Image 1: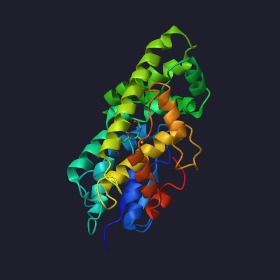
Image 2: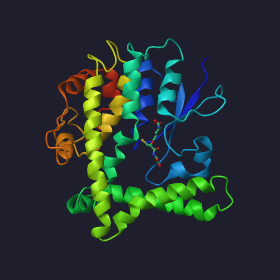
Image 3: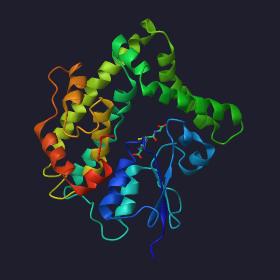
Image 4: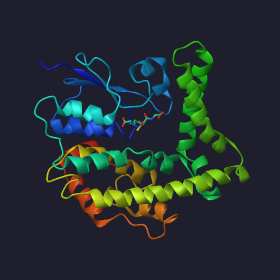
Length: 286
Ligand SMILES: N[C@@H](CCC(=O)N[C@@H](CS)C(=O)NCC(=O)O)C(=O)O
């Protein structure tokens, strides 16, 4: 019998979608083939010493298995490992194109944190402050501050110091009264939206059709779906409106007025959204 493995997952995470799509596609069953351990990002459970010992980056997903010398901590590697359990089916037809797609969607300039947490003006900032993302940031901050205070001699102390400072750079803007101290943040956010628009244009140029990197579904699709779904959700698309690019387009058009999601990206999304695996893992945008 094949070994049972453990996936550290979170309902709040976009990148967990990569292995979840692979598991669904390959027909692996929770509790039989693998266990799922839920890690709450909103309460900063990913920063517990126990979880940092599994994944020193404090991110999800992670995967452990008896045969693995150490945990896998990158969604790309986790998908490939899952795919290697039996006949590989997720290798892309066009490997070079797929690599470009993976590099793009995982690049810092495409991070959906931009959409979730940043703002370009007072109205957007006020909206974010009143949203659930404020509590999310505070939950993380509280956990990081607690770990920082509790473990001055802990081997992960340096990790906690740098994470707490990184999180505080955004949290402090949410805590402060809106004013001139936010202007640099607004300016930076505008620049980041320009990069995001350029990234989506690059994605448009890379997509093959019918699927992202060939005639069959591959890792290129399974790395891009969670990214785009999360971006659409972050843009306040109604979660059941899986085909509605309007809110994401309008969000980006505020910085890049001529921006549109391209026709190939739309066609690819419609193709991939029709698959059983997509419908099982993404019954709604998340
Ligand atoms: N490169 C990693 C990124 C994983 C990642 O950033 N995951 C997010 C959730 S989607 C996370 O755990 N964030 C927590 C944090 O950064 O504190 C991968 O692809 O697995």
